[in-house]
Structure formats: C-alpha cells, structure tokens
Amino acid sequence: MRSNLYETDFYAWTLEQSKLLKNSDFESLDIVNLVEEIESLGKQQRQELRNRLGVLIGHILKWDYQPERRSKSWRATIREQRREVLQLLQENPSLKPYLEEAIAFAYESGLDLVVRETPLDYSDLPENCAYTPEQLFDPEFPSGINS
Image (tube, rainbow, N blue to C red; front, side, top):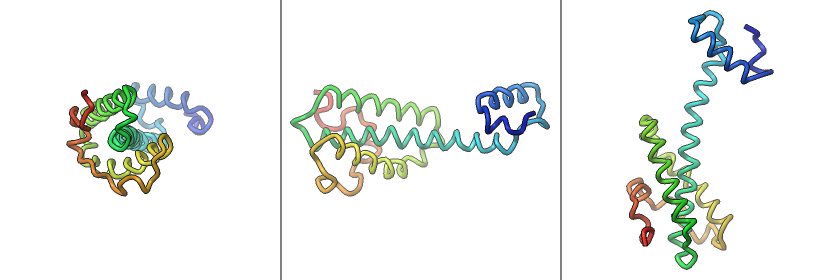
C-alpha cells in the first residue's frame, strides 16, 4: 500500500481500500484514514439533514410572511424538501434523535435564505423556530399550501 495515496489521489485510495477489504487483506488497510472517512460520512448525513431543513424552513417562512408573493416554485420547493428530509430520516433512522437540534441549526439557515431572497429582514421574523417537527412534515402545512 502506498501510504501517501490518501493525500495525493483520494479516488485511487478509495479503490485500493475497497479492493483490500474485498480481499480480506485487513493488515494492509489504511485504518487511520478509513476511520476518519467513515466518521465523515456520518457527519455528511447530519449536514444533509440540516441543509434540507434550512431550505424547507426558509420557504415555509417566505410562504407565511409573504402571502401576496406565494408561488408554485415555493410550493414545489416545500414539497420537495419535505419529501427529501423524510426519505433521509427513513434511510437513516438514527438521525431522528438529532432532529430537534438540526431544526434549531437549520432555522438560522432558513432565516438567511429569507433575508437574502426577500425584502424581509431578520427583525421581521421570529428569533427562534416556531414550527414543530409535526408541522414541518405535515403535507397540509402551512395553510394554503394545497390551494
């Protein structure tokens, strides 16, 4: 095993590690970097959850705070992000205990999205997320979403 392959050609490193695992050549594995990468994969799932929740919350805020500007695009984004978050949680049930914390972090991103994309400012919006997980995943929420 070439010890610096991890730093010089990550893709080749992954192929090599996969081959070593398939061949049960455990002694040749790059254990230190494998552990790091496996931990990183878990962190990516948490980040994916926060990112999708941020977009979902941001669009629900836009829907609630700018009823005169509601659009098919906002409706579709809410539906899409809701579906993607639910699928992520279904595929990774161990993320469920992290959901409330993820919502709190995601709310900040949702606020940034609203401020960036609308005339609203931070002072126009609640400081903390007022939406419950049940509301976020309710296909009938927010009001008027299916009209």
